[in-house]
Image (cartoon, rainbow, N blue to C red; front, side, top):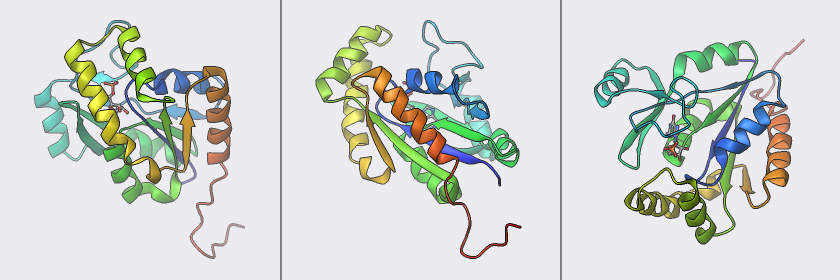
Length: 197
Ligand code: 5GP
């Protein structure tokens, strides 16, 4: 494998997607892994761009067929990362960027730990996370409450990440994420003594 993996996790509403979008404009050889999900499409999202929006039955068939590098149930919906495109891009030597939750990160570490640089994106506090979710206007009160509860449990995994990014100032945070993405390309992927010439 010549490529590297940049795994980005963090509570829903922490601004991960916007940060990723921003750095993808700056990195030439990066590939964004489009996950599959069974959740409802939100206004402004596009099938095949933000996610592959599929039914629960289709997702479960894909699980059985071994289609996923990892999958998890988050906020009562399935989310999963397809293995094949990632292997293809890693073989090409590209930087694969994945937005996955803390459960998915654990599984990805077991399989590709030597290639992974991981970043946990968060807001300065819980109140600003709540404000962002309300301002986004895409979720019902009940869904927001679920996402906030999930954020609290996700925070307990923060120690498993290489970097923590507090997304307070978007410009600063995207600059930092870009620096981390560049550094992830230099991660030492060699096992002990390896002949590289
Ligand atoms: P949202 O519904 O806000 O787009 O995403 C909800 C959560 O699912 C986020 O924490 C996001 O990181 C996570 N997620 C998105 N894609 C995947 C995936 O392929 N696998 C896993 N495990 N989590 C994902």
